[in-house]
Structure formats: C-alpha cells, structure tokens
Amino acid sequence: MRFASHLSDSLDSLEIYHFLEDEMAKYKTLNHKNIKWNKVYEYSLGILQEYSIDARICNYFVLSCIALNNEESFRTLCRLFEFLADILQNSSQKTDDANNLNAQSKRLRNTIEHFIMEANRLNLSCSSQTAKDLNRIFGTLGKILECELKEIQIKQKIQKKEATSPTSNIKQTQFHAQNLDTTSLNDREYRIFFNNLAFELLENNQDNLNAYAIFTEAMWGRIKMLPTHREYITEITYPDKNLIQILLQDNHSELEHIKCFMSNLALNPFWIEGLKFFCDFLYRHNKINVFKLLSTLTREFLTRFEEISHLKFNNGESMCSTQILNYFFKQDTQGTDSNYIKPQAEKNKQNNTIDDILLNINNQNNNSLAAHISALIEMAKLFEEKNMHNNAKMLYTQLKDLMEKTLLKDYLLEDYSKIKIKSEKI
Image (cartoon, rainbow, N blue to C red; front, side):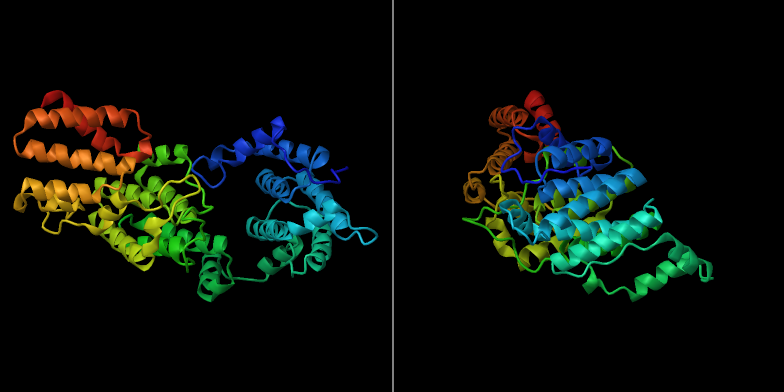
C-alpha cells in the first residue's frame, strides 16, 4: 500500500476534505455518536494516499481506526506508521516534506500516545502479531520523535494475568482509583477521570452535590491561567450552534442531559454562557441546592480570573459578557423559596426612582446585542409595574421582533415565550 510522499499546502479544493471536516466537526460534541466513522476512514485514507500526509489527517485516520476496531484497519494503520517512520528517519536526504512533517511532530506524538492509551483501555480487536508490529514501529518512532512511547499490551499477557488474579473487577477498579496519581494524567485523561467519577455518583443520586463539585474539577482543575490572546481575541473556538440548540432543547432524560452538559462544558471551560444554560436547566428541574453550588463555584472561578470578561472567542463572541457576569454575581437573597439569581436592577426597583433605574440600565448596557435585549426587558418590566401599559406593550413588541431575528444563543426560549404573550395581551 502506498501513501502520498508529500504535504499539501492546502486541501480546500478537495471535496472529500470538506466531507471529512463535516464529520469530524461532530467530534466530542453531542453529535459525536452520529459520526460516520467508515466515511472518516475512507476520506482520510484517500487523502493520505493521494494528496497529503498531514499530521491532522493522520489523527483523523487513527481515530477512525479506533472507532471501527477491526484487524484490517489496524494493519493499514501499521503500514501508515511504518511509512511515517521511514520519511522522518530518511537520513540520505531530508526533503522539505520530511522537515514539514517533523515540524508537526508534537501532534503526531499526541496521536500515537492517544492510540496506545485507547488500545489498552478498550482492549481493541488487534491481533497479537499486529500489536507486536505496532510496538516495534512505536519503538522506532519514539527514538525519532525523542519521546518514550508506551507499548500496546498483548492479549495473551492480559489473559494470563487475569487468570492468576482472584480479585473481582470492582476491587481492581477501586485499587487503581486509590493508587492513581492524577499528576501523571494528561489534560484529556484528567477531564475524563473526574467526569466519570461524577457520573458514577449521579447514577445513585442526581442531587449529589459532591458529583457537581467533582465535575467542576474536571472542567477547571487544570486551568492555571487564561488563554493567550491578541487584542483580547483568543484562538479558542466558540461552541457549535447545533450543540447549543441541543443543550437548550432539554429533550433527553434528566440524567443524560446533565451528563451532556458536563461532558461538553468540561471541553469548553471558558464558555461561561454554557454554565448559565446549565444553571437554568438545574433551576427548572428543582435542583436548587445544586444550582446554588454551581453558581457559587462559578463566581469563585470568575473572581479568580476576572480578566475573562474582556476576552473573546476567535469569532469575536465574548467569553463572559456583562449580562452573564450579572447573572452570577447579582443575586436576590430576599427571594421566596428559590433565592434565584435576578438582575440587580430588578432587586432594587421598589426602593429606587424611575430615574435611578433607567440610569442603572444605561450603565449596564455595553452595546452588545445581549445587553440591548436585557435593557429592553428591564425597561418593559419597569413600565409594566408603573402601569404604563402602552409603553410596556410597545417595548415587548420590539423585543419579540428582535428575538425572532436573533440566534437562539442570545436569549432563552422561556424569556421569548413570556414576551410574546405580553406583547399580545397587554
């Protein structure tokens, strides 16, 4: 089997490349289970054979092999690794493509380490001979990449070890958990480990506060500093709009939806708006203590990294807008049963004059779309409370029209439903 001996500067002109990117855009999202791994295998292999041996495409191919989990794909993967080792080890002449591939060595190394970890964790359907061949190649690649790569565990050795061990699977799991050194885990393994612990606790009790505290460790435990930026624009991608719609639809079982929130938020630790969505979900489902805990932990995170309010995703969306900041910091502790967070302007309405309230709204308006909507809502509520119904209806009508032209992420469906009713009845 042959592979392309060069790297392509751009794959944008290839139709199969765009098909491949469409499938991999679902990776680690709520659409993950809908990935057509056979297509990912086909498209990535086609690119690797005919157009480019780019390390990112190699990673896609490795992920598809893990998902398909069959001997044929592993043998093909073995030949790919052999080919890559040959190019990187080419001592007679270092081509530009070999040098470029060497520049991608970190990504290639991470891809190999991930494959080895998954092969041992999932006990993949890889024959003993293929596993031996892969271990041999990993030994070579480890020297070339100047790193120490672990080996795939051979099945016969695992079976022999299990046969001589009388302990149950549960005891083994407890032993490994007790002796696990979390400092040895990479960031991805760290997130998975703590999220899985949280999931186990939730299976027995969905209101277990410890589970949600452990989830925040999965999400923020490895965060030591804010992401780098250029004029406050980071390289972090804003969550896919389809993911946001799925999270807001709330159409899963309660437990599964909580897990969905946790899985995706752990992958997007700076998406504070997503945490607001999660808190809204918890409040709607009467998990008031959990709601309070997660709100408190989020406030602590925002206090620790207060500069996050200035940062933006790579598309210009704010990581933590003024509206979101107010949501977590301005609480109505005088509330009825829930102590639900409310805007500060609403909390003080009974004691302030109209001028004071309007001035407060003006100060909180940072000219973003979300701030405009929030300001209009506050003004409409103010007019309604002061029995200025014509003014209130005018603003509610404007809000309804504005929301209908705005992406779902900019407001909650519940707010829109209430505003629509008021625009028609007041």
